[in-house]
Amino acid sequence: MSNRETYLGDVQDVSGTTVSLVLSKNSMTGFIYIDGQGYRVGQIGSFVRIPIGFDSLFGIISQVGASAVPESKIEDVASGDKWMKIQLIGEGQRNGVFARGLSQYPTIGDEVHLVSEKELKDIYGQPDKPYFVRVGHISNADSIPALIDVNKLVTRHSAVVGTTGSGKSTTVASIINALSDSHRYPASRIIMLDLHGEYGRALKDRANIYKINPDKSSALKEKGLHIPFWALNFDELCEISFGDFSNEKDRNIVLERVQRYKNDSLLKFPKKGASTDTLSVDSPIPFSIHNLWHDLYVETFGTYYNKKAGRPIDNLAYELDANGQELKGNAAQGIPPIFKNVKNEKDDDEKINYLPGSLNLGRQLLLLGSKLRIPRYDFIFKPNDWNPDGDGKVAADLDSLLKGWIGSEKPVTVLDLSGVPPDILQTTIGAVLRILYEALFWARNLSQGGRHRPLLIVMEEAHIYLNDDFKGMASKVVQRIVKEGRKYGIGAMIVSQRPSEINPTILSQCGTFFALRLSNSTDRSHITSALSDNLDGLTSMLPILKTGEAIILGEAVKLPMRTSIVPPPKNARPDSQDPIIYDEIPSEESQNPGGWGIAMEASPNYEEISEAWRAQNPKIDKVK
Image (tube, rainbow, N blue to C red; front, top):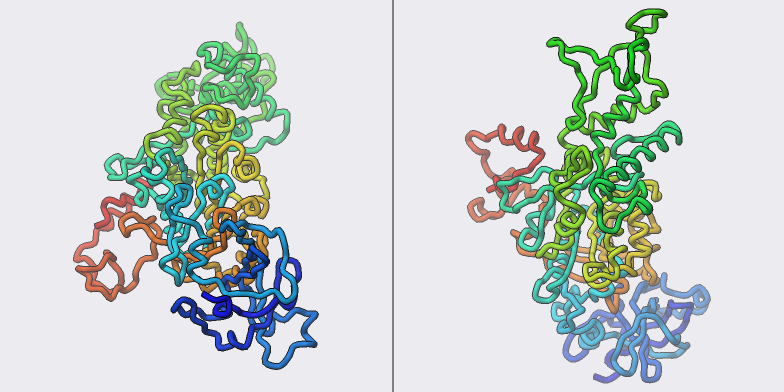
């Protein structure tokens, strides 16, 4: 192949990483042939090469036409000239290795050449390298695989963004399937936060699925999701249990009481690595929150007989129920005692007062009591084998919890959070992320730690809990993960349909972007501003991408590439596809079980709707 075949023109202007040129007369036809293959000249997103000695600079065409003329050349533009603007992104060295960044710049008069498909194959990488994982192929070039560097993808963080219906969930499933290939990566470790229960079916063969209300009859073999309250730090525990405190004094009272309960539990049931000298209120030591609540409730609402003998706390005046039994409540069930009303009459033998030094925690204790009684909060306050008895004894400890999440025989763990009450969703996500981070942080030098076996955390629907300027628990932890997680083998994959709602600080720490179709200009501008390369021309293509097509750019790819993502098989895709309103395929051959084009059942069973609603379970297995 001669250089004349690929020649486009000469450099006319250089401004930083932006290069402008005038197309040669031979290229003005807009179509050239290289090795028998036709190429259209001037396509936005096409690659060009600028030879400089033994090396070559590579860039992407970002603008073509009058808008590509540099300001300094506007008055000198000759009639008929066709201008092109290029963004430089890296250089190919004489040994055939491509590297991002520039060690030199072009000068006026340097030749600019179109990059052929053969050259792109050499640049994009080789599929046989084990650290490259294939997620699809280059759009309009089926023979060139889209390869992702696993080392850079996991530890340098990534983001998958795209408008609803752009193929975002399918892209995530394809990436997870590629990363969890047991033959290629037998020790891969991935945990996914699934807010809408979309990925259980897609990853069932290679994932453990944890759910608050598991369907024991489901083919997905769902397991119960439990997040022990005693594994939360004090701030997380307060947000989930007590809510806000009216003043610092009340908060400190609860803090000291939690510290005391943990200390008593540790004395009765010692834990390796913990001692009373180093114990803090944030230490993950089991204790009975039910007993804590009951004791605080008595101190806040309890009354006593003023003239009876003994300590007031021993002479609590409980109301009597209809059978004459004292209503002392039940700490384990969250049922509060009922006290006699205050009777403040002088010299009365049954004068009743409040306990001296009563606490001002009424609102907080009423809130916690209701959560202890409501079953939907049991995954935190009654976490099965991790639920302490009155003394703080548990049947299972943190090691079994972590082994289930990040140490099982399957490479993927899906935490289905679709049943988490909305009022504690953000704090719950923050607690899960912090538990994972701290576990791998402190185990960084152990074989189970992140340095020896890195962990990828996939955060679906991230805009829901990362949009509050780090005021929420989840935002604070994710900020720490994206800034420091790389050193401890913890990688993050942020998945969102609204990148503009994610805090820019978090987004800017993502080294690789999978940008699918984005119609909203605000979302596009957030992606453009978060990129290290000056690729405005490439990101301007985001509104016109096809479904399942993505522009992949950043550290995990050698060159930015427009990619057709290969979707998983139809029976292994996320439960997020658009329903088909009318299917042209005859109903007996169609994959769509319903739609407007077929007649309704003779007797549709609406009892199943109420059953699924009340059970908070979509019952996937019942769908034919």
